[in-house]
Length: 145
Image (cartoon, rainbow, N blue to C red):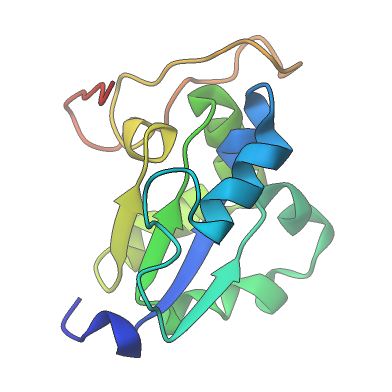
């Protein structure tokens, strides 16, 4: 990252959590730091939320202009297929390869798994059947738990 956390700007992508039961309460616990990991409570200079499901309804420059100023992208856990779908539908997936050269990507659970060829799904959504389970950018797979 090249700078201390207290000087870093982070964006949290919570979208995957809505694909699992209890998602809204889990999201509250992630943001408040009571879920067991300090994902959001590391002392960031700023912490914003980037909700992928809202992005298709916004002009791209409203949200895309935030990304070059972002040092860390925090991508939360939940359902991989749901997250993959919204990464692609929102347009963020197309931007990520270029952005990852300048920012740190920290994925938690589904947020890490979607960057591989594995992915998984909990099946709690009504996505099109052909929705990929992960973007599959690198040519390896991980399953963190």
